Image: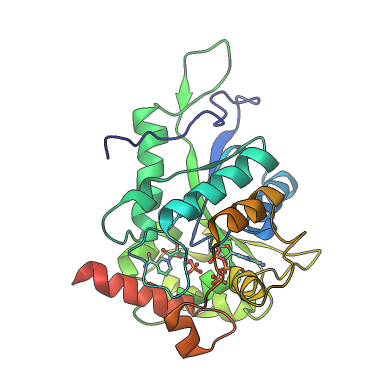
Length: 282
Ligand SMILES: Nc1ncnc2c1ncn2[C@@H]1O[C@H](COP(=O)(O)OP(=O)(O)OP(=O)(O)O)[C@@H](O)[C@H]1O
Ligand SMILES: NC(=O)c1ccc[n+]([C@@H]2O[C@H](COP(=O)(O)O)[C@@H](O)[C@H]2O)c1
């Protein structure tokens, strides 16, 4: 990892309102390829904070963390390509989003709890937190929160996909913004978690922040890969710079063997995560 450095150039290092808690939003996923919806999720989370939690939090950063090549999911491009596409998309379409390549550079699958711990450590221990005002030397620890779609939340109550310890860590300590996604009803995803949270005497659900999609956007990377294989246009679904990169590197022209086998519309992320978790623990 000698060539790794934590990206902090766009991290807001000083609060604009000294009374607030700095908040860093982190999306973990395969991003194969990154779509406009992946980028938009962050804007939706910021709007949610401004509208519902602005008395407590100020968003100071947003990170994407693409999974490594050890995530056993069919049809993904290499981690190097996925990280680069995310970087290009962030550089060209956003003035605050960043990509942390740490997870993608690891030589084994890293559960999401570990990724959040890593970012928390970089910001709050290595960098020492966020300055409370330009005229003060006081630093405040940033709160790190996960960001994902309701399909991700749904996997959290599927047996064997997440360990109880990791759920406790993520939902108890960090918290999550959940963007509702068609096909994954939020209430169905929340109910089992509510039971487990109570069973353990902890308020998990209080740390789950549901973000409604007021303009429904159902872009999925699986669909994009399919369109590319079929020679269809993907314009206005992904940033142009990513489309250019896909063309240059000839990505997703062939169907991945496992994807073909399954013949599925959307790769089953829960089985992929379970397989990845099984690989990492074996
Ligand atoms: N259209 C969408 N609406 C809500 N959440 C989304 C949407 N697209 C992606 N996400 C969320 O973004 C995160 C990372 O996305 P991921 O890379 O898994 O994309 P995906 O489109 O779900 O991929 P795939 O189709 O390959 O499973 C996940 O938590 C996922 O739920
Ligand atoms: N046990 C875990 O930590 C666990 C389980 C399921 C998914 N995940 C993460 O959620 C994301 C899911 O991404 P995909 O939807 O692209 O499969 C990945 O970043 C994956 O690492 C983590």
